[in-house]
Length: 196
View 1 (cartoon, rainbow, N blue to C red):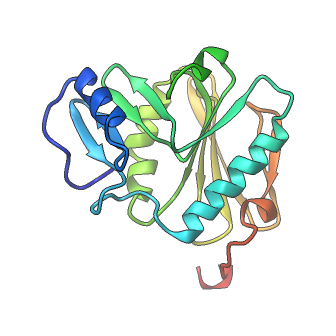
View 2: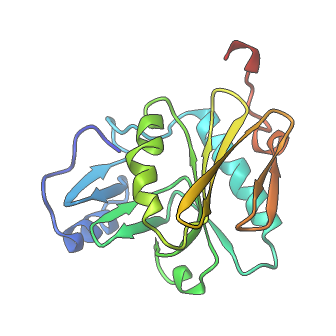
């Protein structure tokens, strides 16, 4: 999310029109305010490690889900959190064919956010609180770019179960019945876990 909003209090229709008509920008929309997440003051992503990890996960999930009823989407597809909230997760997995009709996912099963120092607090705090309101969401996954570490929050009835996976382990996503080896998640991403 950008530090400076595009402008104050626009309608959902104005937001969707703005997002659609701005090829060099991408806007998230929270309660009437549109934030340019690609602009010069944006907080999201932007590093080689962030992009490579997101790519690795998307390729891996796509391969593991071949033949299933689920599809993998990158950060070019937005998720509607509520009538007044739209965001662009790094990776979204939906198993609802109705979600594959346009550029908006309504019923994601899994959302994956690759953490950046500038977005980590938001991804862990407000954004996770927003995601928890989605009845379809089974797992929320946070991936570190500083060390081989993946956190998975799995819905369990009315609560969430937390699991941390580290170097050499495989991340289990029961909502999709797949596992992601961390060696594959972090392939081509140099890092030194010893310094963390």
